[in-house]
Image (cartoon, rainbow, N blue to C red; front, top):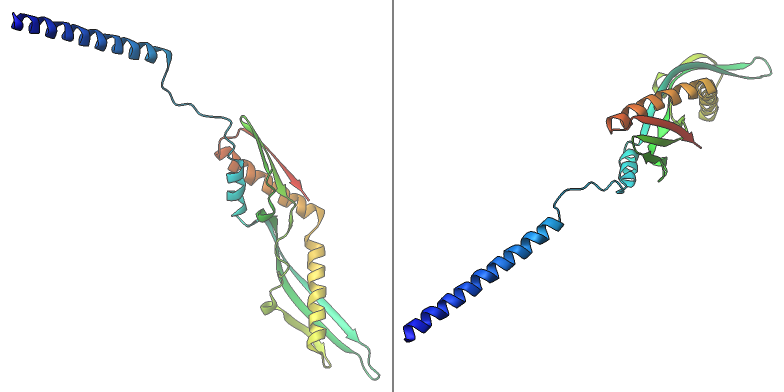
Length: 198
């Protein structure tokens, strides 16, 4: 009799356990139907600050190099004769963009398009004369280091004026646009517009 009651108790407990498991499975199943698992790309994430920082690491980006030579002379009037000094200077003007000056809003992406604002084209190095190649063309009389330094500054001014023309700046801008467009297309942008700011 006791055994019979225990068997009935086990049967009832087993039935309650089966019903509880069935209800739990039904509840989990209905919850899964309402939710879905997936990977979504948030188009709102702005990677522009990272892109600007990586572009700044380029430093100076040269788009045009102009080799030049110039003859500079000076005359010092004397009582009996004049002293003359003439020297030939050689230099290479490197024209491009200093990417360290890139602004925080240099990139404006929108879908498959991007506008890139680059710093103005400039002379990248003021020390462009190769003094080791400087030749004395003609020299009479005695000249001081200050006189030679003055000739060097005049040569640098002349080369800068001849090299930093509107035409050469336009060529450098065209080269910069082409290289930036190529770089941005490799990053997935179809339409790339490049502008320059002062």
